[in-house]
Length: 229
Image 1 (cartoon, helix red, strand yellow):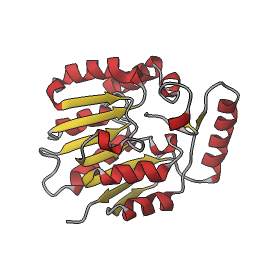
Image 2: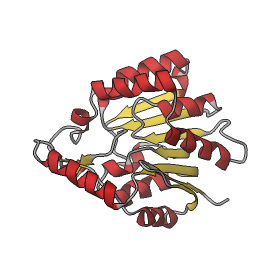
Image 3: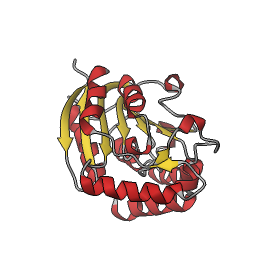
Image 4: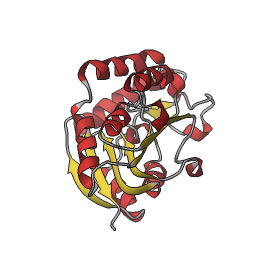
């Protein structure tokens, strides 16, 4: 999804993909892909990759990766560079596919990447196999039911899970409220969500993972968890 908004109820939204393609358009995808080509990962993305690499005893070598809402796949490409065996990307918007295909071809990793469009992990968890590591970057804030989404993500995690989310503070909540007011004027049902961090971590714990990493940032916070051996 690679943004911070979503339909109030994706399963019941009248638009075919819940309206995601209207927000996460080809133009949006091009801007994300071009930024990655010019500058590489953002600081938040680098920290997420670093956590995953450090959390596995033998690093990322031969690890399988599942990314929910991975957009053009920037994080996945970096994980593959660091030794991951394969990646699977779940995306509700099909707008990223052209840019993703170009980046994948440029990196020469086509045989190691699988991309699925239209799969909602919270709604159809059996549609994809578990993976060693699971990533959700700028995704939880796009989904109204964080418990189902994070629960499904944790259930698919064999070794380590990392996700990012906006800080829950007065400024962020005001900004999101203003954005939601503007979104309400349009025809779609998109809304942004600032879910409570501790409640999200509780979901992860209830699904058998142990939170071991947190980083608070001005725009994005990061939480990382591992499955106890």
